[in-house]
Image (cartoon, rainbow, N blue to C red; front, side, top):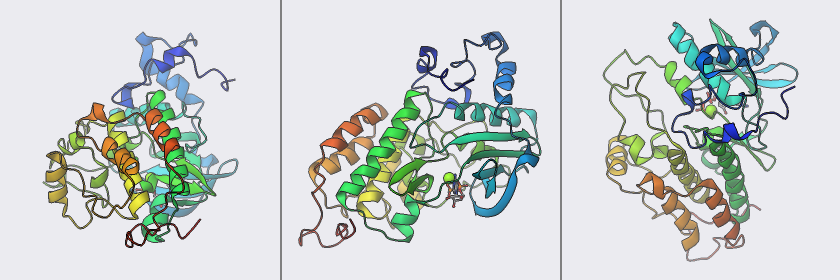
Length: 346
Ligand code: ADP
Ligand code: MG
């Protein structure tokens, strides 16, 4: 039985680790005599065994979409699931496989209402896949940027609060999301579900960095990069030099999500990538010209986007601030006619 054993103090001591990739080897399994520091690699294998899903048990259905990670399928495994298959072209060595497994170890520690349910993984090459519950709703990205949905202030705050709760939980468990963005946040009849936490390294494994002298920048990615991450971008990003994602860089991402919720568009709108990289790297924040909001709403944004990582608030503090925001301060005022006439829908 594993249901109630995962929350001892030893697990909490790793909170705030910079990189979750190697933070999970000697975690809260200390009670298990099989798990010793000296034998960490085999303990990873041991604890992974119960999360291993034989590929042929999966009933793979339609393609839902393609991302950097690979192809995402809907499917059936004791109910509806999402199957994220890793592109195997570049995953051809033991080291890469171990890195994948190390990421998988991270997921079994996540049990929270606002986090997608991790169900297991296929860990036998050439079939590497992650199986999670299937999110039924739409992503915040689709709501905001595709459907141009308008959320009123009370709903905006409610969404932000749930994101902070899920993220606060991840950070308390020592897990850095690394890819918090509106595309990874689903809204299921009012409930926020965050996906793809800790997968960024796996994503990186799927990339062929040997092809040319260019840096491939997925659309919409730059505005989530904190200055310190931005400054570490290299034209040739070698697979081994990871970007310096931390809990603080996750907070920066939250700032961007908060901006998207409020403005209905991306920060730095219309700027070419080179200009965004240059400006953010030098400490300039995105323009707030399109944001007509109260001081306290803007303060959250400015704090999350602080140049210095340690000046960004923790999610616990963000929750307190969000709780204090007046939910009725809508943007109906005729003096704010442009972007924040977002009160139409309730
Ligand atoms: P991205 O997050 O950049 O969109 P992904 O590879 O994570 O790329 O996702 C590809 C597609 O699959 C997206 O349309 C995404 O919304 C969808 N998707 C990913 N995970 C799930 C899930 N757990 N449930 C439902 N759809 C999902
Ligand atoms: Mg995703």
